[in-house]
Structures are given as structure tokens and as C-alpha cells.
Amino acid sequence: PDARQKYILNRANAFFEEVDLKIGYPISVARFDDKQVTGRAHDGEVVLSETVFKHGIRAVVLTIVEEVAHLESEAADRSRGMQNYLLNQLVTCLENKHGVFL
Image 1 (tube, rainbow, N blue to C red):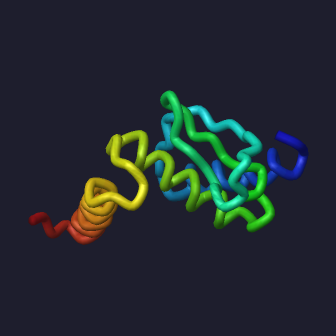
Image 2 (cartoon, one colour):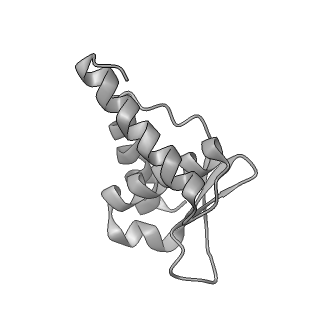
């Protein structure tokens, strides 16, 4: 990563620490031929596209969260498995926050 990318990654990691979200996977940066791709989950690693950094810290955080979800769920993009995983994570977060468990 270049200096700007390192800065954004440091800010993203600070956010994850602040909200107590454990990423648990190495993160690298790569150039993808498809400029629409912001990241990939590959061989137990989060790979961020160089282009996602142009969209700022929030976009990098969102991409990391998505790719971690792929690694943890083993679900493909735009799949029912991914949708179920994300919704379950959301409801679990709400349960833990409010002490109401389903």
C-alpha cells in the first residue's frame, strides 16, 4: 500500500478497534482488471482494490466488512447464503445490544 492507502487502512482499523469488531484476517491491496470490484475474499485474506481507496475510509470499512462476511460464511456474492449471514449478524448485534434474545 502507498502512504494514502496506509493512512486509510490505519483509520479503518482504528474504527474496528473502537467498535470492538475483530477482523481476524490479513488485508492486502491489489489492482483488479474490473474497476467495479472493490474487494475480494481470497485464500483466507481480504484483498482490497486500489480503487476503493478513492471513495474514502467508509468505503474501505464497508468493503472489509463484506469480504470478512464472505470468508466467515463461505457464501458467494449476491447469494441467499450471504443475505442470511448478514441478516443473522444484524439480529445478533441487536440482541446483544438490547439484551433481548430470540
